Length: 176
Image (cartoon, rainbow, N blue to C red):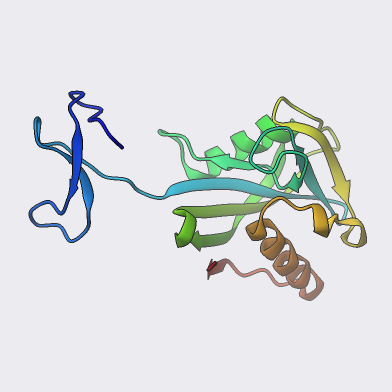
């Protein structure tokens, strides 16, 4: 950050009074610019023991497979955002969503919140964000073509939980 979004003056990095971290601070209007982790929300959709994946049409990881997910928007709950992302990326509607996973990824300043759910029907398809959308049996998941390590970790955990027919909410920290 170089300029204050409030007044346009140059910012400096300093530890504000009462704080313990370097922040971008505007000495002109005294605005402290806090930078916080981004929240990514998504759905792990299932239909008849198959998992719905989307092939990314956009960067990062264009051309690789992922679960329908994206950034949480202001003024929406994590569930609302996850349902929106599923509709935007896969043109899919799900039913009975349940909180499934919370992954902290401090080294990239992100937090992932995922729900597992069932597809309401077999209607889904590509979108401006996904070139392909498909259902995969466990043995057909393109493990070497998955976009993000968090998706790989969650899918492995989900498949293990599904075999046991026991799903607990996952809370993990993914380190570099």
